[in-house]
Length: 233
Image (cartoon, rainbow, N blue to C red):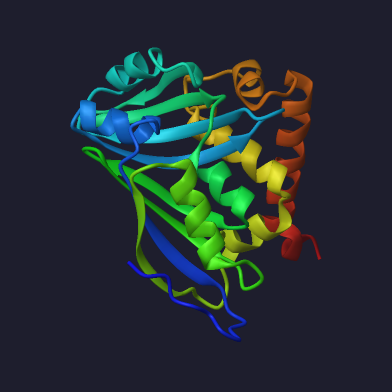
């Protein structure tokens, strides 16, 4: 698809990129296992490490972990949750990633999916960034990729668009607190019995257990205040 110019535009642009680069693990694994992988959550750890949580549909999550263990760019892999037809896996990525490619080019990743070797990445290119530069950078770093759709993005990027109490909570929590809370949730920290301990969650995030606990206490305090501040008044 030809890249459309944004002459004089002050709005963000949403782009959809197709990718079949087998060097991207999620694309290669989805083809090899004939399954669907969807990026649920991403955590930037120290250095260039990324902690990625992928939802798996159509195969055992253990199979995805086995394939990850064969991939040099993935330092660690584990099954977080298993369901009847899939589950959730956690990957510690030390190599290149589509999300870092987009960030380096000035874009914001919205969704990352792959189904049986057909990858799709949706990203937002802010008004101050250049769509052509983003697309060309992506093509250069990830062979076999191309732009398949380009359109004006919504007025505001819906990173956290929930309304009511949920929207208020996400507005009051810091980005780091949201990162900690979502990681704890995905890892089953709130399940009974717990699927991951505070120490295991902290290790995944690359922080100490006391720091994790401090974040959790601050999050709980904010949540309680948000829910009951009117009553207190």
